[in-house]
Image 1 (cartoon, helix red, strand yellow):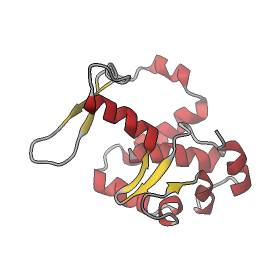
Image 2 (spheres, one colour):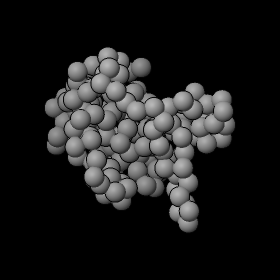
Image 3 (cartoon, one colour):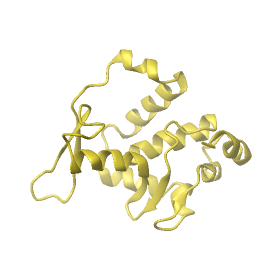
Image 4 (cartoon, one colour):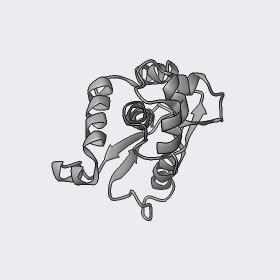
Length: 149
């Protein structure tokens, strides 16, 4: 879930708009996209009828209180037709930055970001807070205009 956060917020920092336009919530272990979480949870709750059931499955490792999302349908080069060039660029950056990292590393990275630091648990995280990070190239006012749903 935090990788979606980095996808959206890195895209906001460079291009002024998110990719998913999901609503992020500050939780103890980092920001969570609420709609994406609901879609994943529907696979957990009712895998036969979930929208994503042909795309992902959920594994529950023994003795670990976590779920692992497993791709059932691999992403193919032709799938990039659904994405803009900037979205593909940011996906590649996120994969390169976090592809070999563990959950704790990614969580810690999210906790260093202004959007998480400047909100409290259970609070919605506005995309405009991305402007407060030093790696943001877009003005807060522009994010407010471009990130509107």
